[in-house]
Length: 343
Image (cartoon, rainbow, N blue to C red; front, side, top):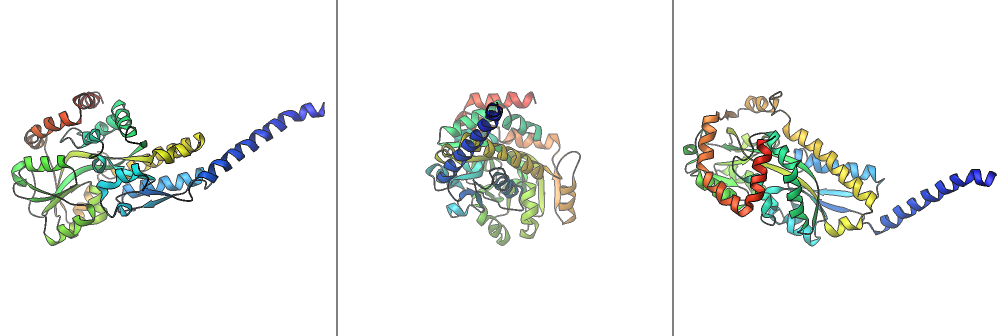
């Protein structure tokens, strides 16, 4: 009888032993370090989200999976537009990457850069957390990359060293640093500016020397990078595009993980993403304007467009919107517009 009474304990012990053996077997196949690429490091919300992901994965896998974050796009010599291809090729294992920087390889990611598509945070959430987000993840998977979660860089606001911007005419002739996407060239050309594509590494020096007059980035980037020290006195809050971030893993790396570890890595990405999104929005909500007030206290002159002023920018970029809607895929854009309307 004692034998039969002890049988459940023996079965449980055997199961635990098999589980431990499975973990050991998988861990033996794991790399000692997985390289994670980001453009911005800490204390930018982007870098904080990546760091939190690494921290949670190490903690929840008992150190079986070790992520090391490499900021400033250093794994691709500072050229963030090469990040997606490097991850697909296995040069980079993982990334917390910008939809803008990956859009040359995945056309659907240009959706978030359609001018004035998303008026507020709820609109962004309606896309990333709904059927549109899943469609975009499907497109990324076809490229040999496993997307597993969302984070956020934020709405991109326009700044310059010359004067307040309240109408498209105020951009006429301004030399504007833009990211490496032809869509941004089209937007600023339509607004009368002279866009110049350059990496983030080159942006602040160019602003400081006056090689360019202005730029567009989330307020958190302006804050941490102290853009007012580069002459960027004037800020216009126009929410013209947003910059969601994606946690992603090279497909071969992803397939090397056990199912249990895949679940852990994905949940860690979801949790780190929520953490990063909260940081990216802090001080810029209806209930909390503390970041905006802090920037004004540092000397920034901030303009918030009225609905009528904003509509002039919408009208000026409508042809660009329609052109890129066809390139991105009309069905996806229609789905996005519907999701936003129903938010």
